[in-house]
Image 1: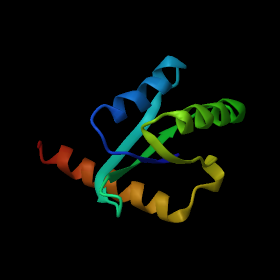
Image 2: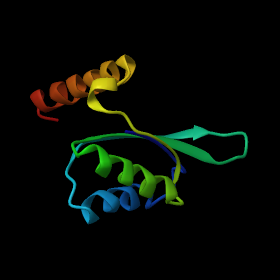
Image 3: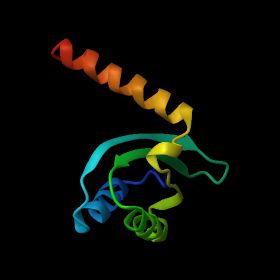
Length: 104
């Protein structure tokens, strides 16, 4: 799933609590903030991977979209992930592996 958020302190915790409160394990959580908007606010993007049955995913998306912290939710089934998201996540995964290898 890809979320667009307000990029305020505490928003990430609110999002993570939705998962933990439902007993769902987050496989990966990658976030970027600071995309300034014309309104003067700042938006962030979070990509979250997890596994759950389809109905549970739909329910989770509804709950997340109702949070004040979340501006927009895009949910994808594993088979329907956009290629650019897969590519971007592989780049970040490799970067983190490189950092881990160097002991940083």
